[in-house]
Image 1 (cartoon, rainbow, N blue to C red):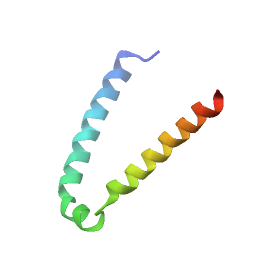
Image 2 (spheres, rainbow, N blue to C red; image 1 turned 60 degrees about the vertical axis):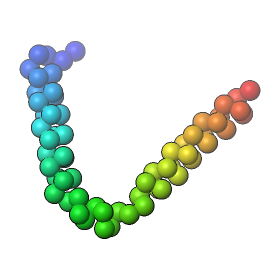
Image 3 (cartoon, rainbow, N blue to C red; image 1 turned 45 degrees about the horizontal axis):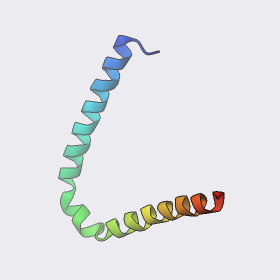
Image 4 (cartoon, one colour; image 1 turned 30 degrees about the vertical axis):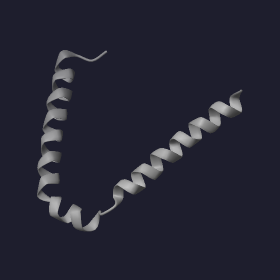
Length: 62
């Protein structure tokens, strides 16, 4: 499906992307602590909502 070169490019691109994202996050870490306090609550609420939708789907399917 993919050639050897395409796979190699994809792996190299992914590694480079992750490294750049780590450096960018570390550079902005002070700003994240100031402006994004409590964002884990939003993530937790979103995940609970998704789980609730799956539970409703399972119970209504029976």
